[in-house]
Length: 107
Image (tube, rainbow, N blue to C red; front, side):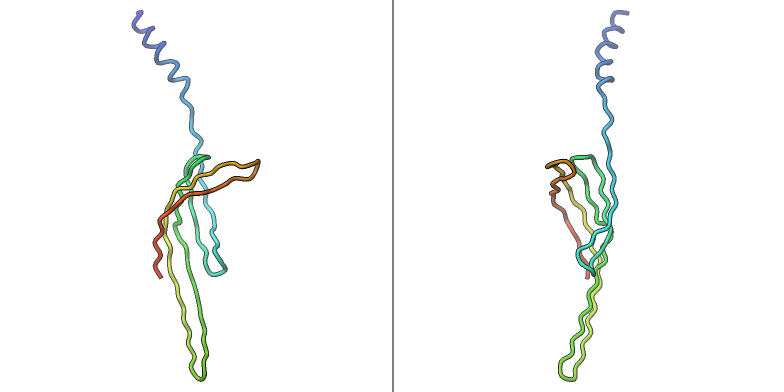
């Protein structure tokens, strides 16, 4: 009986100290210019998040006319990437975001 009480007294504080971590999930639109846009998904906690750029459509059109020659160039592509983002609160409602990522661009 004493052994059971000793084991319970050792395990009980560890069970009481267990806390649930707050998970954070975000989805957003990304704009680089009027012809570059996409989606991003972030998952993690309040201090650090994994960032996934799941889809970014790139489009560019160039029209040239010189003398009697006319040239129309269109570019389209996809950008995929992931990275790690860290957040640090500077003041209330203002935070610093920094991190790094790896990206694959196909045009």
